[in-house]
Amino acid sequence: MNKAIDPALMQAAEAAGSSFKMDAHWMPFTANRQFKKAPRLLAKAEGMHYWDVKGRKVLDGVAGLWCVNAGHNRPRIVKAIQAQAAEMDFAPPFQMGHPLAFELAERVAAIAPAGLNRVFFTNSGSESVETALKMAIAYHRVRGEGARTRLIGRERGYHGVNFGGISVGGIVANRKHFGTLLAGVDHLRHTHDPARNAFSRGQPALGAELADDLERLVALHDASTIAAVIVEPVAGSTGVLVPPQGYLQRLREICDRHGILLIFDEVITGFGRTGSPFAAQTFGVTPDLITCAKGLTSGTVPMGAVLAKQAIHDTFMNGPEHLIEFFHGYTYSAHPLACAAGIATLETYADEGLLSRARELEGTFADAVHSLKGEPNVIDIRNVGLVGGIELAPIAGQPTKRAFDIFLDCWDKGLLVRTTGDIVALSPPLIVEKNHIDQIVETLRGAIRRAA
Ligand SMILES: Cc1ncc(COP(=O)(O)O)c(C=O)c1O
Image (cartoon, rainbow, N blue to C red; front, top):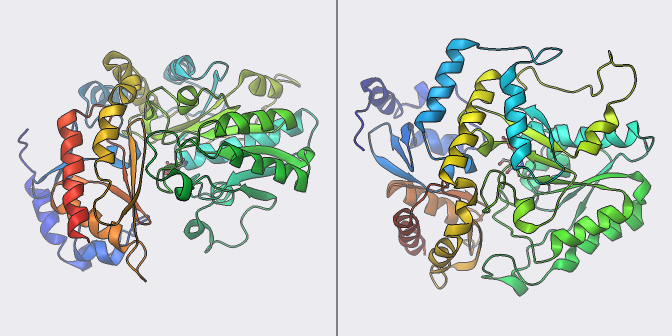
């Protein structure tokens, strides 16, 4: 693939040398000063690759940001978005609707775990989390248990960046600057246990009993005050923590015992990442609510959703019919462009078998990723589906620096990876082929060695 690069983009690249021209954009989750000194500017994408503004080809090892599951710039999705933009730009979602919203909801419900057949649209993972937390609390109130307001998250959890999400989340850097957060939140202990489970392939054997931590919180707060527990089935942003065998089942049982709703945050795991449409299906545990986003439109147009069990939805459907049942929603919920993108994305997944492809490639991917065992400073490797995490020993006194250096080195060698703390995360588009996996792992191996 040899695309001509727009001269204007080349100029932008040159301008990138000047910090003056880059001042206005305060970049999210970015080391702004470092970036603006040595910018990494993307210009084009297709399939498994990006091209930077200088025309350099970069292999995408992280599906953009865990979202471009169908691969980049797939013609069917591009055309659907273009056509919809020309047909109807926007439709108000409050007290109005448009057909694509209903079609997409039905298609999502059709691949969701059994029973989660009601779909509430948002614009991001963070909004999906806020929506699910509010839905859980309101659900208990509507059914007469208004004291159930407490929310339980988990240490090291990532649930986006809004106040509900950082309150139930458990990543300290995302919480410590932002005051007292939501009241009435508690946390389960995390499941990272390298002393017992280092270098596990797939689900670690040990740690199901860590779910019993929920019983401790029930004993402390009383179940009658707890609305919901939210966990990522596979914690992604904290560095790929795969649930120990039996852990999610045990969490489900304890929630059932105490009437607590179980929310799976599937913003990363949704849409094929673990080899099934949702990780709930991969692990055989059905939550009451699922939050998703990212892969819903393969990252093309911002969109998220909450999938709810029908019984939860139906609980709200009471009272006079002219009254709004759930006082929540966003101006851009079910945006026509996002719906068009979502439908074309789901069609692409179905036609190409992408929602189960991670299962087919899991062994190949695991072999490749685990071949990094024994490289300098590699202290753990974790994988499930098409997700891998390589944990490195931090440089003494400089946490995160080793992984960041590896990220920069990979970029330099034409590979995009993601780092969090001293962990390198991999999550390639689901169209990845074995040669790409080899390129990802060998490039990373070189960077790990050079960072020693
Ligand atoms: C599990 C999980 N929840 C929520 C979010 C937040 O999604 P967004 O960045 O679209 O708000 C993310 C983002 O990576 C995530 O991984």
